[in-house]
Amino acid sequence: MRTHHSERHRTQRVGWLRAAVLGANDGIVSTASLIAGVASAHAARGDVLISGIAGLVAGAMSMAAGEYVSVSSQADTEKADLTREKRELETDAEYEKKELAGIYEERGLTPELAGQVAEQLMQHDALGAHARDELGITEGFAARPVQAAFSSAGAFSFGAALPILVALGAPESRIVPAVTGTALVCLALMGALAARAGGAPVWKSVTRVVFWGALAMGLTAAVGAFFGTVGA
Image (tube, rainbow, N blue to C red; front, side, top):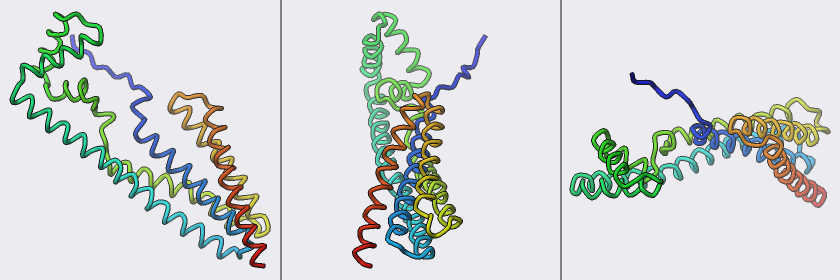
């Protein structure tokens, strides 16, 4: 009787989770920092909002382009490796079988069993077996440039929209504390959700993301306040 393995592991979420968390965190931190810096320079609310919206658009496009280019490079490398492996299987299948058996021996199988496993796997899907066990390429971790680009851009836009909305609704004199305070709370929530989804320690993730977010916003606000004072 044949059964289907339906168990799902957290490592299968690594690709999209990394892009989503990175995009949202970057959107919150960079946009909140930008708004805090401009507002600290005593700019009018309209100028603060324009800077925030410009930061949202520029950041989302930068994230999308960066993810697409980097993941495309990874995909090109994977494709080249698979093409070479396919050619080697066509020209010297016996050597490739011995190579696969050697991998299984290194993992603890006896030579006889390793040879049997390699032979059966190659009969079923030779290229898939070598891609998985020799090259380390699996379906769950395969590079997907378009998915990474859209995930990063969408997550960045979502994160960046939060401080913009706060700046829109807060009193003009309270924009900086309102935006930075809300941003830190959102960063803490994002860190906790990411940790729970990935099975990592929650407080360690929250502390890390809040510390660096606070540092970025504090430094940017200080720069804005300095130049606002100089230009006054």
